[in-house]
Image (tube, rainbow, N blue to C red; front, side, top):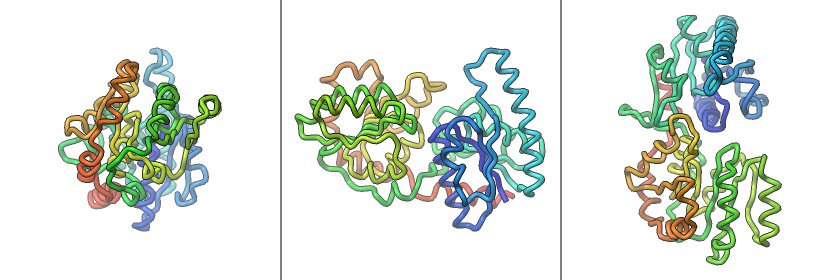
Length: 337
């Protein structure tokens, strides 16, 4: 039996989901250790394919005062001892961390207990926890490293991939929690896109759903608006172009779906990792990147929307990632035990 740990946001949790699906195919039993905070419980509290789940009172350490950091670290240490008891109870053979603050207790617990720790880093710039734990890990997986493991992406994104040729539909993606800037941009551009006959799909997040719904009604524009969708691949399939944040999970889902994208990286992401995630594609001439400031020039932004070589980018995106990222990760883990 193995432990899958980590989360906090949809990007981390998507990887847990992919690894769980791969483990089920291999008849490999898993337990999940996450946090009471963040999105962990919303994703997995009712997930019956885990043998059991533990949601601990873990919290983040980054951007805290020195005193709060010390208190948080002391609490993580306490929780790591609790995790060691969990490992012993379930005869755990390995711990796979996908990062995020909710991965800290089980990751430290694995090190203290002498259980092999495997880490997946989702971003081009490693997070603080993963950077610290990397020297203590048995293996470190990343789609951005020299020794590449394909990023774990749900099979439906590959299955619903298609070549884009003509701009008929745009999808705005703000990530699992939505993004106010992208929401406001979508509403601002909506009249001009409607004038050009372009349909809009908009993932706005739960917090801004009512505001966005009201704004589109006032504009008298019919939009496929949703807060969150369990079948995002089908929404991507409808689109010919995406305007999106650049979280790693979203980026590789877009690649798997061969959907050309204009990325607007979240400017306050740790180590500016969203910019460097998108730069991975920009360096291959397979996306465009706009800062939030650059988006203020509406004519330049609109020109980019309507002049992207959709067919070329869509074709080339097919070679960026592959289906079996989670399977390869688990095979590496099992072969090294």
